Length: 115
Image (cartoon, rainbow, N blue to C red; front, side, top):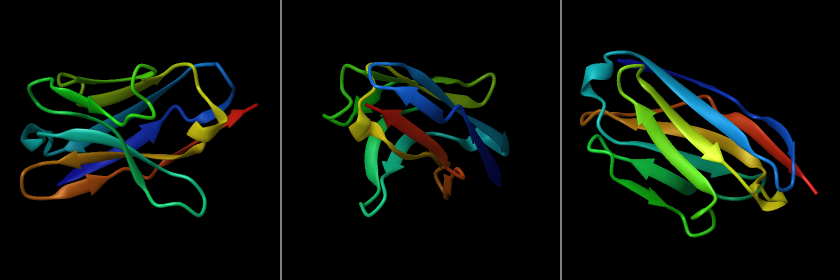
């Protein structure tokens, strides 16, 4: 069993930066893949970035070059550094954790980018 707590969302001006965190607790030894997803009002939830246990990363085209995903296994925490933010990045951001037997989702954190 894994519990996730997200933090770091808020309001930022276009061109600014924001950093999100996703802290895991419980049976964290089994965590393998981690990722970030987002969902804007009236739209489907979409993939943002992922990172595996070996450190391999992947990004959606819309955020490539602006966002950086990382993880600190000692702290059981995943991060998303968001730079050069655009109004189109406005959404609720969710962290996703895969243990090999189950998928866990964070509660979501609101990111709002003003023009």
